Image 1 (cartoon, rainbow, N blue to C red):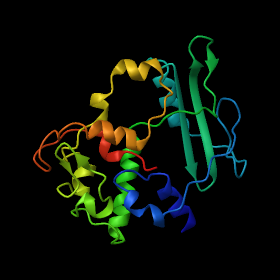
Image 2 (cartoon, one colour; image 1 turned 180 degrees about the vertical axis):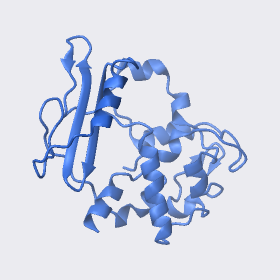
Image 3 (cartoon, rainbow, N blue to C red; image 1 turned 90 degrees about the vertical axis):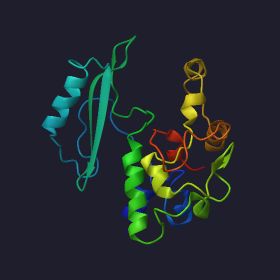
Amino acid sequence: MTRRRRARGTALTLALTLAVGALGGASAAGALPASGTVSDTRTGRPSDHARLRALLERVTTVDGAPGALAEVRDRRGRTVITSGVGDVRHRTPMRADSRFRLGSMTKPFVATVLLQLVGERRVRLDAPVERYLPGVVRGHGNDGRAVTVRQLLQHTSGVPDFLQYLRPREIVADPLTHRGTRELLDIAFAHPPTFEPGTGWRYSNTGYLPSE
């Protein structure tokens, strides 16, 4: 049960903050060696993952990516596989303890956690977002009372995508700048909905913003 709660705690988002008080936090990963395939960090038993290694090597050769990293966690522990370089200027190998930002790959995990909460009858998919996040979805015609949890997850809410209103130069100028959830929500809700909730489909990162 503890392990299950920790896994959920890593995926809290705008659509999931409704249950933040009931979920535990994820523990930080331990330090790993610098590069290459890392043996199981809890048992010391090596993991092969030959197919995964081949896929990573393809990514950094045929597909042209400079570097790639994959981490596998199972009952035996954790294995990290790397390929390519982490610094294209100095050609240094990709490190197994590299820090990186996760993008939209987190969304399937978020949706899975929410469906678990639905299964526990703690969340209703067709309930308005306002029930769980009062006053959060507001501004320029955006209204959490008219948007359901299901619509947020399915990108049918019409909630504007904040990335549409961040200038590329702002991001490139300082890619490590942290923008909090409230700031990004303010950017999104300074603009009208893309469409009326439930009447269309458009990808929107706003519906999956992390909680703070």
